Every structure is written in structure tokens, then in C-alpha cells.
Image 1 (tube, one colour):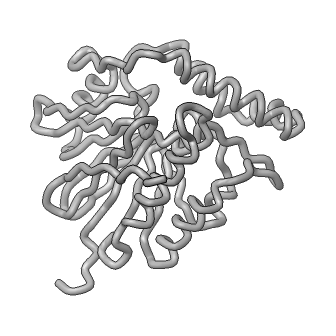
Image 2 (tube, rainbow, N blue to C red; image 1 turned 45 degrees about the horizontal axis):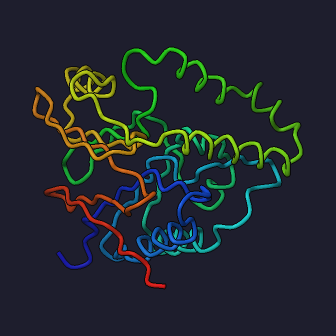
Length: 251
């Protein structure tokens, strides 16, 4: 049908601002991806967290830069493409700034019907059994009391502390994470969740590795890789899922 919006795009873990390898190229690749989305055929874009390597938002102060990224997102929204954002473990602290632009902030696990297929979406961190200390830290980062304490720091100091911690956590992970298959807590979460309600696709990020697994009930678990070296994304056309890579930027 002419004019029908049948496409939905997904991307995760771009880590904009991470001073590792070539951050300007990474941002340019992400902008190129956003600009390549066919505005007249796309219903929604889902950003599955850690799009920014560090984001902390004061009431009147936000991190500088990313003008081209926000311009590309605004172009999509002005063309009636719905932009949805999940907070990752690096960009937890986004509040009214994104929402004022029209970006919808969602909480995992988020279940949505897309073209007749049922998707369960999120960043993927903290889902499933175990990870007690990580879940405790995640809870603390999201508590308003601790956020208020951090907000007492001057933005100059807060942003440098945050970016330094974020970069250190990434540099320390010199080996790509090996998804544990059926032993991975995220897999167990998906199995338990799909046993309670029908899900066609589980789509997450966070793990920085490419995962596509069939669950016992027929659902598919998909984990999107990060953008540190490549530019992976997924789209759904109402019938099937497809995977692509935003092209390298010629210098």
C-alpha cells in the first residue's frame, strides 16, 4: 500500500563520546545511519541504551556536543517517525531534555506489537537471575537520593568524573564478552518470560556481542553488537527481521 509505514529500526550501544579508537568516526557513522532511515516508510526507531557513553542531565545543563545526532533525530521525528529510547547503564541519567524534544523514554522489559509480531525490548542489563551486586549498583544509580547527591557536584567535575569512570570500565574489557548461551541470565529471563506470554522476538543490547538464539517455545533472542568497531543495526519490515551495517565514513 502506497505510503504505508512498515519499517521499524533498532540500534544499541553506540557509546557516543567514548574516547576510544575514533569517536568522531563513530558519531559520523551513527548520523549516517539515522539519515539513511527512509522517513516515509518508517514507523519507529528504538534506541536500546548506551547510545551515549556518559550522559548526566542537570535541570539547566546537559553534555555539550552531539548537535548532528540530535538534528538527525529531530528530522526523523518531524517526519512523524517515533523515536524511542531505553536508558542503558551508561546513559541512565536522562530526564526532561530528551522528552522535551519528543523522544519517548521506555523502561525494560517493554512489550509492543509491531506489524502483528510481539517484541520484548530493553537494554538487557540486570534481567534474569543472579548479578546481585550489579543490580544493587543499578538500583543506586536510579535512586533520586543518590542522583541528588551527584547533582551537588559542579557539572565540570561531574562530567569528567563520569566520563573517566565510563572509559575506564570500557578499556578494562579488552576481550569481547562471551555470551553463555542457555546459562546466560538474559536467556533464562527470556525463557521464563515467554513461558508466561507469547513473544516472537526479544531484542536487547548491553553485551557488546552478536547473539541470535532460538528459545524452546519458538521465540528468538537477539542481542545487538556495539558500534565501537562496526555499525550494526536491525530492522523489521512487518514480516521478517534484517541486519545491516552503516557504512564506514570516507576521510
